[in-house]
Structures are given as C-alpha cells and as structure tokens.
Image (cartoon, rainbow, N blue to C red; front, side, top):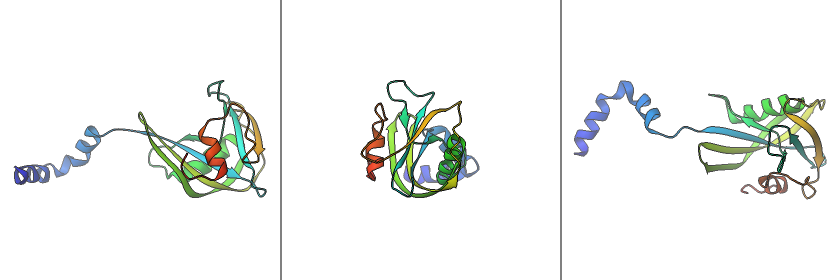
Length: 150
C-alpha cells in the first residue's frame, strides 16, 4: 500500500503544491514590533480599531503574502508611527488562535519623527516595561519585560 501511495504521489508531482495548499490550514500572520528607545522604554499605542476594553498594544499588523516578517515589523511601525526601526530577534511565535499566527520581534529605534496615523492610532507613549497603560493587551506585559514567551 505504501508503494502504491508513493507512486501516486510522484505521478501527482505537477499538482502537489496545489493539493498541499488545498489540504492544509491557511493562516493570517499578525506581526508585532517590541520597539525600545535608548532608555529601554517600550513604545505603546492606543489603537482606534481595537476593542475599547483593551485598546493599548504595541505596533502591529498583518504580514502581506510573501513578506518577510521582519519587513512587516519595519513597515507597520513606519505606517503607524512614522518611526524607523530595525527588526531584531524573534521573541514570540504563538499559534492556536483559530486561523491566526502571532509573531513578535524586538525592534531597535533608528530614528524618524513620531507622526501617528490617525486612521489607526489615537495615542502613543514611551513606557518603562513595568509601567504599561491600563487596558493593555495581556501579551504586552511579557513582551515588555523581555520574556520570549507570554
């Protein structure tokens, strides 16, 4: 039986990737940047479109098809805040959220001028890791402390 399945799979080589795409789960990937300034403070944003019960979080957004996740961090921080960052090490990878995967990278502030995108962001604060705003996304506490898993 195994040999038969192996032969069948080889015969399907021209359509294997399409079959794999059809048979496997599809995910959107939310990417977060843990942006720190030279004093070690973390950039926190009050998001317009998030739940009013937890509007505070870090710069984040969804990766585009084929986009490197580090590039997503750089793009999202720039879009939401006008700041330039360099994405660093991966600090969180979390699945099990239905069809969403969550990824977070450290991000070092390079420069730029803080200019909030008013369609997405209502307010920005640089916060010491142990003084995050009230009504913050729970995962932010661990990420601000430098934990690699929430």
